Length: 79
Image 1: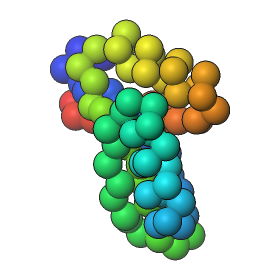
Image 2 (image 1 turned 120 degrees about the vertical axis):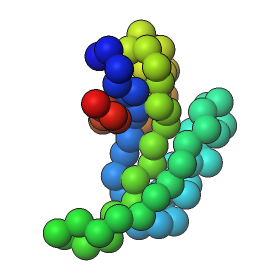
Image 3 (image 1 turned 45 degrees about the horizontal axis):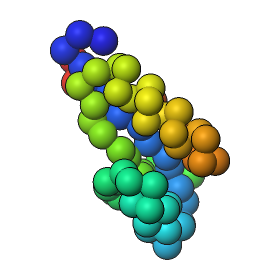
Image 4 (image 1 turned 180 degrees about the vertical axis):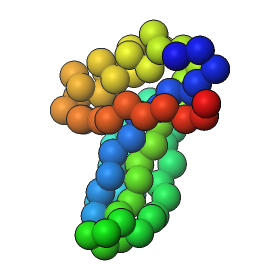
């Protein structure tokens, strides 16, 4: 993944649920951001952690999230 930044994200339909997820992540020690975007199926809210410069760091974060019942998708940011 050279020259790419990797992050973890979730897409949530309801803005209140997205903010609640951001708060849950904060309790787990992660700083997350929430951004809204328009999809074909309507408005969605992206909850993102990262970016991480190293795949190993992202994998540790993903493992901790999984251990706490949080399912995330891994996304590449950049070229």
